[in-house]
Amino acid sequence: MNQYALNLVNQVRYEFNEQPFIQNQNSIDTVKKMALEYQAKNESLLNGHWHDESILQGHAENISAFQIYINNVSGLRARPFDEAQGRDFINANNVPLFSVSNMDDLQAMIYYGVTLMLFKDADDTFGHAQNFLTNYQANLLSVYPSLTEGTGTGKYADGTTFTYKLQNVDMHFIWAGTDQASANQPSDANVTGWRLSQDHNHYVYYENNQPLSGRQYVELPTINGVGTSWYLIDNGVVQSGIQAWAGSYYYFDPANYLRDNNVWAIAWGNKYYFGNDGQAVTGVQNINGTYYYFTPGTYYLASKKDYVQSQWGDWYLVGDNGQLLSGVQQWAGSYYYFDPSTYLKVTNAYRQSQWGDWYLFGSDGRILTGVQQWAGSYYYFDPVTYLRVDNQYVQSQWGSWYLFGPDGRIVTGLYKWMGSLYYFDPVTYLKVTNQYVYLNGVRYWANASGQLSLAQ
Image (cartoon, rainbow, N blue to C red; front, side, top):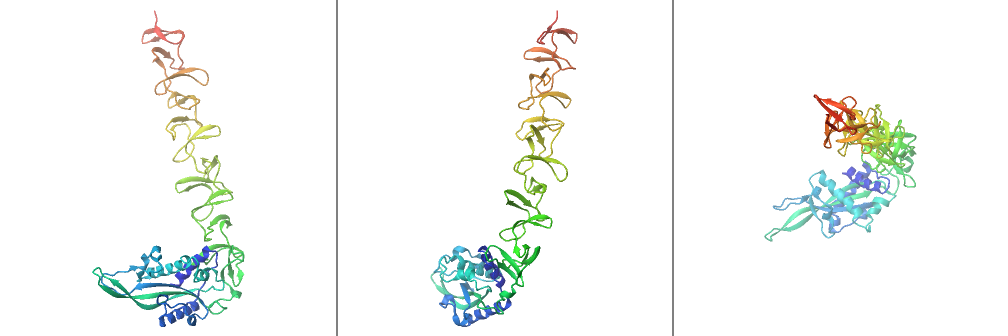
């Protein structure tokens, strides 16, 4: 319970850039003795008794008081304290009734005690926040409850009244031994632990009154007092943000100074990502199902379109958001197609774009136009739209004219087009003009336009 209370208070102090409180067995024993003296004298905030100076003897104290239900009355159930919510404590003239039967209930009682003392009393009339946050003479905090008996009254649905037993719980947060260095307060001449720098901008770790020397990644007691954690320390000063260490870069959360894994960070106008080992990643990386490229050497996310080589040797097109691109993409004065599954450039393929149209890509991956050989035939692709042309008579890139049918393939032999018969040479694919054509024993004449008519 003492450790939970200390951790809770230190988390608040941490948010206000205050150095953590500490405690030891002597301080715990001292506060326990004081709390039991309150209990023996039947003193409680709930029966009108406040801080007893004969018990406190000059120490600073905060008290949070609650009532708990302790006996079973038919039809009467008090909610477990663990079910409490902030709105239960809004009415200052009403003390809510709860039951305490396990550690979760006890921790909830401590949680609301600290929260209400710190944040409900806006004017800090009773000096609660001063003790928790600005009493710089205090650094040893311990907590212990005193219990006093009480009774409550209730009424059944039929109007019958009844009484039940309850206990007043006064949770005493006492800064014991704060007036001078003693067994309850380590001397400043032998400081070991975290302290705020004089400008209150940095936490510094001391060993025997000296900042921890050198730059090292070391396991230390946590700043908020909960167990231990690993910190990057530079001559005692805890580091945060992107930091160089052991041949790589890592990111330390500015809120708690702990190393973050699998996290994005922004610094110097660039974006970085730190993997599951905490190191800054480079090259092509899969992050939550999306592939990104991080520039080797600088570690930052690519921020302009580029064709880059991965750490395994393959090449990819990267967008200005750092993501690998797929589908039809414009690059270096042409268009290319990148497979949506592999992100690799596709060559010698007829592929459907992300918007549904189909295009032909050549041996170097560039989109093709004009007359092109593909899949055992010839096709024509518009030089402006890059789309396959169907049912049109078009001029090739070398000047000759060809007819392409409804499936886009080049036409050969006898073919009816625009109401007339034409003949296209099976070898050259060119339209025959100004000559006789013999087909199945029938002689035709192809005029200057290529139109066929029966010869006389």
